[in-house]
Image 1 (tube, chains in turn green, red):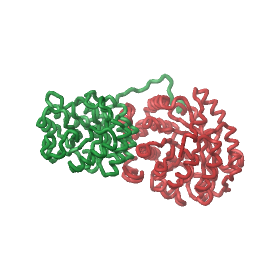
Image 2: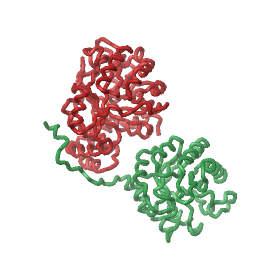
Image 3: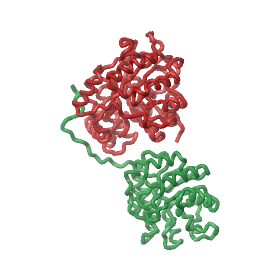
Image 4: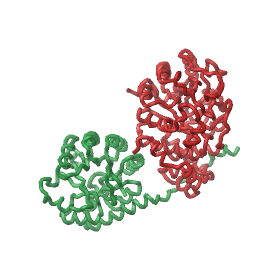
Length: 254
Length: 373
């Protein structure tokens, strides 16, 4: 089980709500995924309406909503968006996304850190979407983040774990949960992320754009469980012993 | 994450930890050798008796990792003993309060006499050492010493009594770069036995010193235990645990480890546990395999043969030409030493030896100008 802030999750697969062909398909897929934390873009939901198409399909006791600030371009806008979400959705959880770059949607580290500092003071549970930058992760920890969400590769690219070397460093030194977000394109990517010790993964595009989102959601569910089990059981070592012609320890026999 | 190491430390039992190390098998060792990112459980396997037949493999890997990370350089440092006054009773130390020797604390003029000799030897990195005598060797004294030394050394380290966070915060802007504080042993009961009197008898205060240093944002800190007081494998595991905790929490700080083996001194204590040269090599390699970035230091307590061969196996810094008595370089060369040293070669001779092995002796690896407080 995974604990973030004061909440315990049975599932380590978090999901998103974008790109589905209909809200009905989205609902079915998310239920098949077993996900207990689902992110929704503030820019896509009608906060004033209780009949909103996306929100009305997410009304399950096991599903926690994680509003995200996608669309904002700086810390100031992000803080405003988070306050708006707290009021409308009655949750102090926020997925902090600040990507001023419309082409690759690369997260802005400077503004993300600033926003985290601000939001922590305002009592938010912050899950920032960031580049796989180990130093930034430590700064965010100091600023009071509840978790870090480094990217595996660019958002929506399905390219997998291109940043794996840096993800491993982040995982090895983090004091908060590490959730690999963005770029995970297949269940094997998700399993790999879990095998290297990620606490959870967030998957949206790979499920939403597959030919059968419901079946794919279930495949991800199984892959995340398998990856976590492998991590806990410890993978067998890859042996690459050095062979030397001149022993380094023979002086001990003299 | 907890606010200090004691909370984490208290979740461990010495006996259970010891047993789990001794229960490690050859399979555990092979697993640890084959892993790229080694865990604390892997470290236990590497220091366990089961790892003894794998020593050459460990040494080869340790050498590869060290060369990749540090290259063929060796940092040199020299201790400057400022005082042998001490209010503590430590059963293994020549400065112990109950040891009837003449006490001395160097005056500013005497310090400068010592400095002149050290500069002549070529040093730019000095390690200040004292006993614990809070009436004479206190923060104000250290402030004066730092003022005196700062113009003459690029890097100033300190191995004195544990201080409060506020003391460290006063000393760091004055040029204090590195603080070494050895736990001596993580065995709580034995610690009390070896430190029956004085401020040092407070186990927790010492255990939490690295936390205070981390909070004061010291540039580098050194950890270690005194090998010989207790089971070295268990003590070393707790050192590794402490290091891992600190690295994650105080991530801007650099870390170093030392492995002092109990040495003879006036009125000395026999080691409870003997550690062979082979075991010391095992420990050094295990630390390197566990942590690729930590600096590993070896002092002149070790023999010439051992020191010459350990270069290239994982060590990244060493002392040379050391005197372990206040005034030992110029003021009073014949006064009582804290412990006997084994390698009496001059720094010049050490530099030549390093050169013959293809290594460069590094005398300066830091400049105070880089730190703006």
